[in-house]
Image (cartoon, rainbow, N blue to C red; front, side):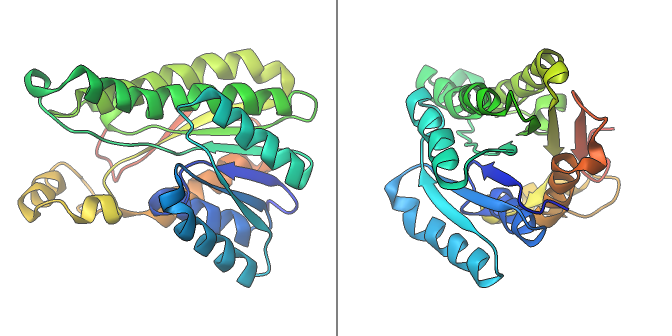
Length: 247
């Protein structure tokens, strides 16, 4: 479905990003694994090794997406390795949860820098590389950006920003055959959610009509759809994958 396409997935050494990278590779894409700092290099190399074991092609590139020059280097490194970029998945994200009255300006800004500014940086440089050939940009938002959540005003603001950004940029690039869409996961089981207390998980479960948590592969399947020609007439959309949590 993605044979010979070149895909960059930011924040792809674990969780949803890793699942997307593996799923893309299985569909025939050449994959660029992105990690934010050298302490993640070993994990990134492991993902590359697993993709190559499946017969796929992959490289790992270090870049902090919150830094415009590093984001530019990520795109340039991709083109140097594979000659083009067809798919950009802006998945990199962080949380620094805190009630508003206790949250520092630094905690607020750091989340916006990665989750929103990072999407801006990579989309700007990625879209430039797609202008002649077209492509697909997929931004990772969240149901928290739709519904809000106590203790996550920084995260909610960043993810709501991604939704507005996605719709605006989709209008800018529609005439260039660059589609821009977003995925809004609900509660997805990852190493980040595994550490939550059981009482928190139980509370979340009550708000999910389907009464189950999602898994990363379910997000990856939607990403494949949005990256492929199956969604060739879709742009500016936000697809919720949340078991009905935000309906």
